[in-house]
Length: 193
Image 1 (cartoon, rainbow, N blue to C red):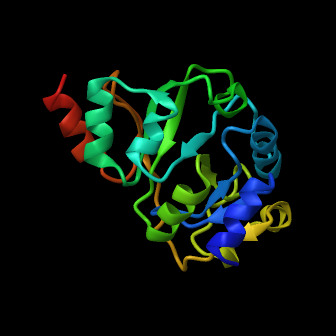
Image 2: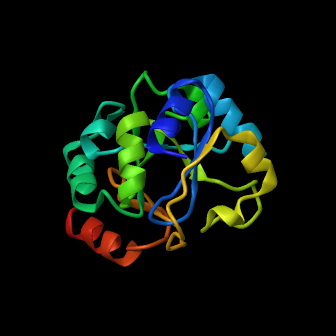
């Protein structure tokens, strides 16, 4: 399937599997509570566990979050990259995405096809394309049958590198999950208290 097909699927309220700089992700329109609900259902994920939001650029992220100077500086340093940046959400971001919490994780993956897709279709959900508790998919052939059945389009970008993004609240200076680049991120946070 093509990028045009994937963008049209998001516009129609369908779900899309897309490659990232870590694993394959599962996308639904992040600003549409019904699409977000379909992502939770496809994954079998507890609704109290927030989903992140994928966008094509830091500037696109800033349209949907309130970022301090420090948070914006952090995003401009580390994005695109395997980092999820937690920021205060704007009203455009539905509570369904964040489990009712005031903050949302923002992802700008360092992957050309993902960036093209996110620029065209975003913001979309940024969560791994697997059933909760199962292994992440690094190739489209690794996708759970339930995920394949739940999506309208699979964007195949070949094998992804694997691993996890580092989840960080740059405003608070807290790393919630250590993933790729965690040491470099930690050093940046310590240098800029």
